[in-house]
Length: 332
Image (tube, rainbow, N blue to C red; front, side):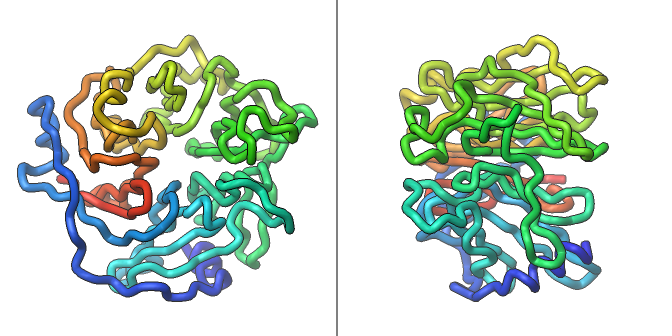
């Protein structure tokens, strides 16, 4: 993680708040006894920080060596910023601008969205305003990994995941465009799910999902999960991933239509546990589902939620929920 440490130093973080005893919100809804494997009966949703505009894309950065702290990075899309949280230091500004480097107004969501570490420990970002997926190099500059498909600019990359061979999978809905789907700057007439090889070859895996959003990969890398944030068809999809990197026929893993009548929000980001269980954001909270789609329970915040990630040893699930950064302890 030396590369990531260098990036953290180069970013010039500025402390904006200090760690304090967290408050709690919401509740855990138990739909199946299997939820007990992950969440204890007294598990609480802790609010680590609040007062942001719209939080997204959390990623855990492991400690460089024993005795040092790991860190959580997350986006605030409207603020065009990435923040860093640590147990002892609280929240610090990590990177600004994070997703738009232009000099004119660019809508309400110009910043970075999904974040991920590559195999070298470097921060990889889905950038709304600059309409690309980029990597923050050790020297502090950004390198574009992909910004177009067949010569046409991407819409606004949203979320991403890497496989063990370094292939990048990402979604590209229109949410980061100032006028979204109707924006005159839009060059692609579809929303795609893509694969980018380490050599830079870009393949469109599917354009069948109206609003692809969160994305995840099963531990055996044989299934690609994609959340669709379309209010007309709010579903989580599972696609067989073939050895050649293409997708087989998808199946609906779950449908959030019923939950939309109770809570605000849509299917969005997700984290995949090492045993294959999905923790997926949706209306009012985070849905815990088996790879077959059985709901074990919900972590209910009561409001809109966006994304989540585990720390290094899966002892905590960190969640971005509207203007808040939250976490809940996970059994391991």
